[in-house]
Image (cartoon, rainbow, N blue to C red; front, top):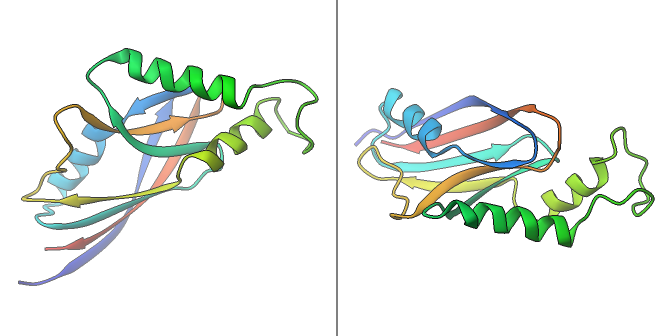
Length: 141
């Protein structure tokens, strides 16, 4: 079996603060590139967004996650010390700190083996729409 590795970027547009299901986008890349079995590592190149695997069966799950983070790290003028370029800058950095900027997912027979009610999400912490860059590394067959 010949091992290969590949590096590439995936650009994801967000509407602003949201959990965007990117499972299909990443699965399409895996399929289009002919990846069979290996490991996919995805790195979010931003301090105002994160990656996570979460339930997708009920849209209230994402609403609960968003509400939880609003309560945990609210946007309150004067609450945070670093001087933001935008008023949601400090809270978005703290939210990202509590989540993760990289995730590794196995590839099995050309598929992401997510559970029946799981999706890969880009968790946008900023209010304004953004284009996020994901650096992807694949190693496998």
